[in-house]
Image 1 (cartoon, rainbow, N blue to C red):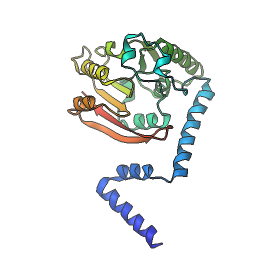
Image 2 (cartoon, helix red, strand yellow):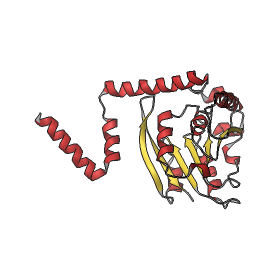
Image 3 (cartoon, rainbow, N blue to C red):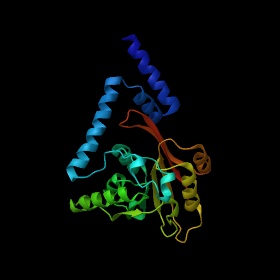
Image 4 (spheres, rainbow, N blue to C red):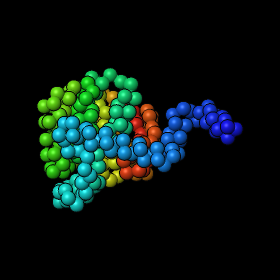
Length: 247
């Protein structure tokens, strides 16, 4: 009993020192192994149920070697791995903004899972950008089924193009989302495009999930961080996320 009381006191002291959210993340990372495995199984089941409910294909990872390796964007791309549904909901709900003003853009949108989740919120529109024609076609099929089921609250589309060529200048208020989709060189080019003078000015929120390359982190360091944290993936790893207000 004394040991339990000491642990509780230590936890309360850490809350006061580091804040509740930081302490909650620390506690989460030190969960007993059976509880952590239960969380992973629950997350995988959530993804499987999502696909099954709407007859989608968003769960199965795809290696880069199985995509269009000759495409211009392939030399920068990473394999397809669906974004955890729970963390995406968390990020969207924590952004205190008027969603109807904002276009949600997912770079490296793959099979479109992020697009489908974002389309359940009343954004101005949702756009995916994907270099691979194979993944883009799967995304279009998934989007069609999702719309047919009446599950969307806004317009949603996937565009088959290289992220470095995507024109942000005609889009005003926007949330740009990435889940470690491609290498640092291409990401730096994307950030230059986002930071360039826009024909249609507006607020830009940039959300990055996964381990961020040092050069990308350095380029973003001059922008204020709106939110940051870590999340448990279904592959039993913890990955960071950071959200910046660029403009």
